[in-house]
Length: 178
Image (cartoon, rainbow, N blue to C red; front, side, top):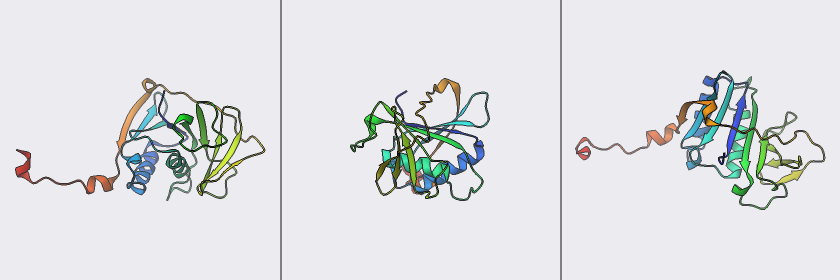
């Protein structure tokens, strides 16, 4: 398990596919959304794994977790959502960088909609706002809980590619196929 990933529960496959397609189109100018892989856990209908063919940087990963929690046009969508990002993939030096993984989630008390919460192996909680600021919180809303995955426990559903990418692909004239 060496990929950054997102676990989503309490969601429907159809909604999640639509939300990820919207996310891919919104961030189509980055390579990070070119090949979002959606998996459903075997023997369940509402538990999913999201992987990335092109691993997003830490900032974009946080945007993606936030977007999945607050997707445009889905006011009643309320998944249980946890992202897991490897500390070694974070380039900037942050106070929360300890251990191998950081857990990313959106606080149930969030009213700003432009941040995520982080918790490290020491159960230190932080608020990461999209202005690039990190604030250590004085209380523990969540405890660090690494949910490992095995792809064998999941059904691969779809690879999502931004429709803008497909629409702008160069069409070859028929004579260039020979």
